[in-house]
Length: 206
Image 1: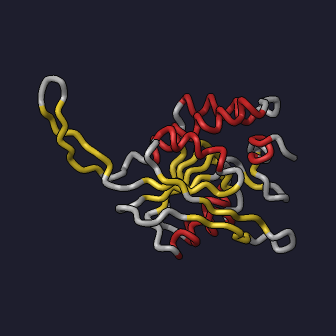
Image 2: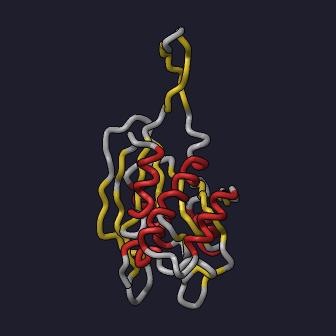
C-alpha cells in the first residue's frame, strides 16, 4: 500500500525543493527535513511494549519500541536522507545497498551491500529520494528479502505512478510513503514534474 503525505509543511518544503534555483546547501537541508516528516508517518504503526519508569514525582508505565529500526539508503542519493532518519531515531542501525542501472539494458545492477546483523525483531526502512521506474527499489527489496530482512517499508520524496505500480506488483507486502505522487515518467524515465537528478542536486555533481 502507498501513502502520500499531504501535510502543509511537507507541501511547502517540497515546493522549495523542486525549485531549480534552490542551491545545494538548502536542497540538502530540505531533503533531511522532509525525510523526518515522512519517517514520522512511516513509523506510526511500529509496535511498542510497556516500560516502567520513575518520574521525579511517581512511578508510571510508558512505552518503548519493540523493534530495532534499520535504515537502508540506496547509494548514492539515499545518503541525503540518512541524516533525517537518524535524527528521528538516533539509535537506528544503518545498512547500505549500492545499485546502478546497466547503461545498455537499464536493468539494476547491485555492486555493494552491507546489512546489520544480530538484531531484535528489526523493521527495515529503504530510503531513496526518487521512485521512478521502481527498478532500483525492487532490487533493494529483493536484496533485503534474500537476506531474511523484513518487514520492509519504503520512504521516498517523490514517486511516479509507474514506479508505485511496479513495487506493488512485485512486493505487495511493502508499504510506500512519499511526499508526492507526480504525473508520470518521461521518455528518459525522469519523473515529471519531479525535481531533476536528486543525487546531482544533493552533491553538486552533473
